[in-house]
Length: 79
Image (cartoon, rainbow, N blue to C red):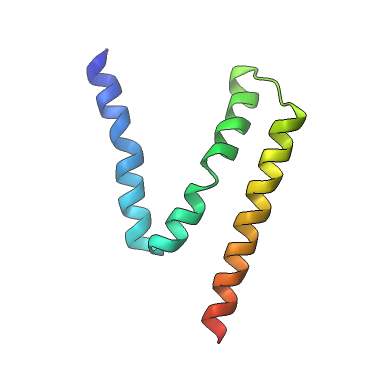
């Protein structure tokens, strides 16, 4: 029902706020970039979606970008 969807829609907002409080806004937004990767993986595992080459390329680009940003953030803290 509509009430169920309203309640489920609160979950990302609550976890987002808790994430910002716990690890800060920068890391929360970086981890938010992984949402499409998570969605694709869950779709393959639980919904029988197919994993295509372009999806793998997209996942790879996201993972490389997030890794570069995280490493850059760690290097900035040491300076």
